[in-house]
Length: 320
Image 1 (tube, rainbow, N blue to C red):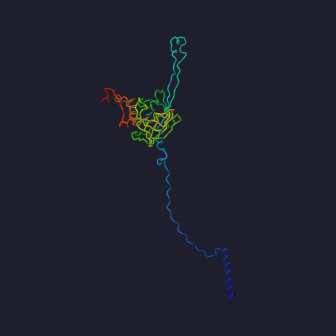
Image 2 (image 1 turned 90 degrees about the vertical axis):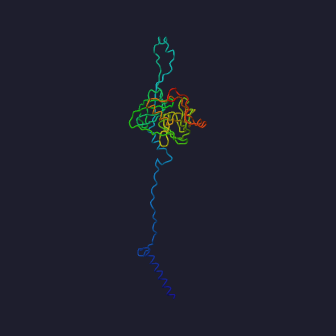
Image 3 (image 1 turned 30 degrees about the vertical axis):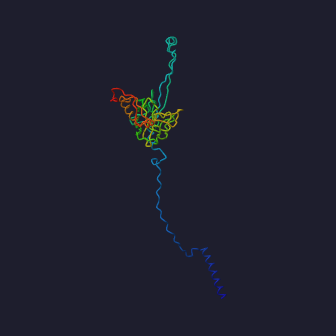
């Protein structure tokens, strides 16, 4: 029995040794067993996320600015200003002895403002106070080109003036309806503040039908907190579609800079006056004078809307 167990032990030891040698030096001699791997799970390819375009972004007003800014121009005016002349210089006795040795002193005064090209024919809307009494008017387009302008007509009552420039392929702004404006709507003011160049500011419509700013003229202003500064006068107030809804005209300020209270002439009034100025060179009124639009406070107090007519010319259309 002992001999049998000894033979078995030796045979097992030799077999293990042989297996070790073969697996170390010639593993290919040993039989292999393939283990089946689980089939991969098919996953449908995902489409790449679409890139956000300017028209779908809610954090940008790029589209409105892109549509409106080409039609907004910078206006540079100049006029000759004569200094006060001492009465002694015009005295006949003084002139007899000294002649005209003291000519009148004169200087060229310059100012700046903004305007909006209203159609491809070259008509430009601006404020009357921007071009009033100017001897020379230059209009600088958004592409840097400068053109001379002529006054077609002006209306001090509404502070609107129409200019004409000659050029090719002039960009024109789209007209929107100021009647569609609501308090709280986002608007953009575009102009040339302080002469730094074309600038865009953003705000909301703060109030509609504002009056009391220009008691001697028509008043139906759109109030906005979009920054309006000197040089913005005559520039565009546009909605988020890039449509003209007003012409920036005035600010309330103790320092002369923006205080968040600016006023624009509604586009519906601009369109009406513009058509009259282009056709007749002046506003045509049917015998009605002294029209003042009711502001929000008066309209709410008396439950009224519209305007107050202070005077009607006898035997006119307005008197019928």
